[in-house]
Length: 91
Image (tube, rainbow, N blue to C red; front, top):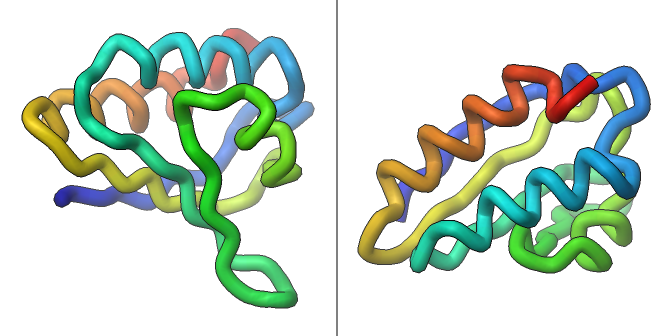
């Protein structure tokens, strides 16, 4: 299992279109990919391969998330997921 922290740069956060792009990228990998976010009430975990799960996490611009990958291609998956967030998710 590998993980990395990244800050959401997209000005509108992970709304529908960026969440769809994030999910589509995650689905290319066999590894289990989750997003973890600290909120006022505790830890929130979302399935990166589910648009509804991502939208339910209410990830906004400036939020710091942890991407956790576990599986056969976890290193490549983590690198790609972090890269897509840092690129702005199609701002």
